[in-house]
Length: 192
Image 1 (tube, rainbow, N blue to C red):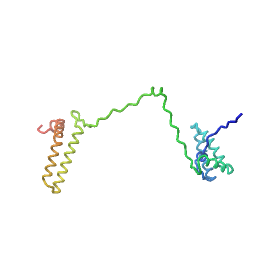
Image 2: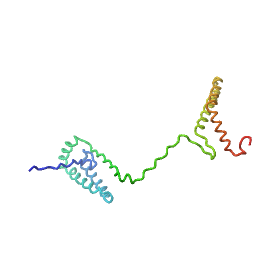
Image 3: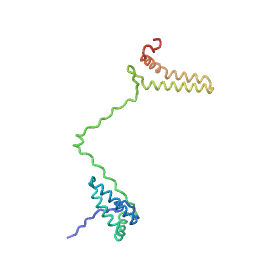
Image 4: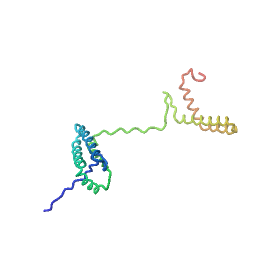
């Protein structure tokens, strides 16, 4: 009959006590008492606190005993490597919900795609963002023409800039301005 040995996973007591492998006995004791108080306080609402406290007691019984500590570090160095720092394992990802639960959950509302075009609605007509863009281009070109006049650039270039402004943007702006004029009360309208 062959005896079977059950291999238990290696526990990193430095990780459990949250101390550096080179921590002295005072640091180990301070870490133990700090964590013991915390886990004891958590035991009222955390179901894992009892297991954490058991692991903590086991780690302290080894690292806190001067006779057991060197033997443990010989085993630890063989398992993790010479002077390896304690590294917490990554948390296990949560399993996806069951297909049945997925079917019973309400699907989140998908937001409707927004239109790129913005409009300012005054109740009757809308002035689109394209109109504002045209107005901005006209203002920029007029500002550049004014700057050109102020810096004594040839007048021909100023006339060209103003002509380009008028040709590219004045038509759509004028169409929209007539819509805005129609929105004004009669007494404020030109000729009204």
